[in-house]
Image (cartoon, rainbow over all chains, first blue to last red; front, side, top):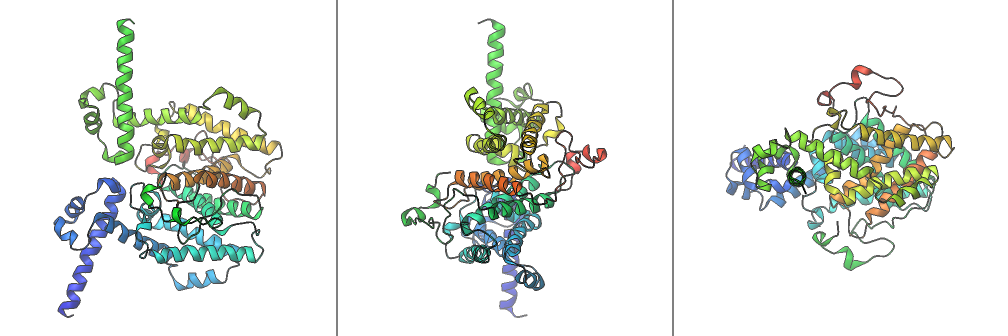
Length: 239
Length: 239
């Protein structure tokens, strides 16, 4: 191994140590309460050394969020991916949201940072970097559209709204499980499976829904795009 | 006002200050990271003074959780309560879970402590104290049973399971809203309304569900009560 390769490998090992320490600290102490100094102490580095890898605490979060979305999108083994391709449209949609639930079990820390924790920065601030995550969402919307085209969901269903409702159900079960709020004897996997089936059955029933649905690319409402609103910075949003 | 009344009033004011400071700190810094000393510093008291009101940090949490469940259960004005009584069964059930969503908006800190935060103690440790909260849950299960009896939900629906699915949906929307994960232009109220209607429509459709349902009183599965498991301490549960 040449000098350049070794340097590269060492640099990657330090970067990994920073990210692992930061992820643990962000989740256990809350993003707001963790400083670069605290991360440095955990891995026995100087704060200045950390700045050589990440210009700010927010950059560490963005690197973790990027890893998280890549782990979420990774179908694991190629075999699983192929099996998914052969499913009927509605089961493919179900499998996508089941994957989100599985991710909450396999990667609870990434899940908490990406979907639950209140004080992390908004990934919309890093528009280019998370283009692949928006691409994932667009792909899911297309899968839902395929169900509509195949007559497995009514034509009145808006893919962006269906996606939000299915995400809500999975997120709720995942939060109950991760925060240990289920009584003994309750099976979180069964609840997650039931909430997906129930929401899909509800969507199939064709009831009228209120949500207008928001475009996945830029946050503008699909039906009534308001560009000024779509590009409002995250910090000015009402909570 | 007599001496005794004034002492009682002063004592109540200090208790209130402790609870308010603790609630803010638990939510902003995480339950695990807050000490009695930190709460004392916030209100400029000595830690010893706080122990005169609450024997431990856990007792402060239990007092907050009790307040939270009472705020959640309070229908507000008597008029709203009366209006509820006149609704058809299914709309009454919907109103109960809409109330849970409203509570997440009106009391986000109590909501986070009661339903989301990972490190708080389990209220099952204070069995007698939270009898009224179990009573509330039993009452909701009865409302769902009334829908079944009236033919508005299929006889195959288990009230405890329906309750868990509706809670999951509301919890998911509330968490997305509280953690500011909704893009601009999306209306959390509409999503909450849609997720309730979609889950109720899914339940009405009579699809088969996996969850067995767990008894609301002691945590034992309704269909197959396993007393040993039901009384296992919260800390030994698999997560």
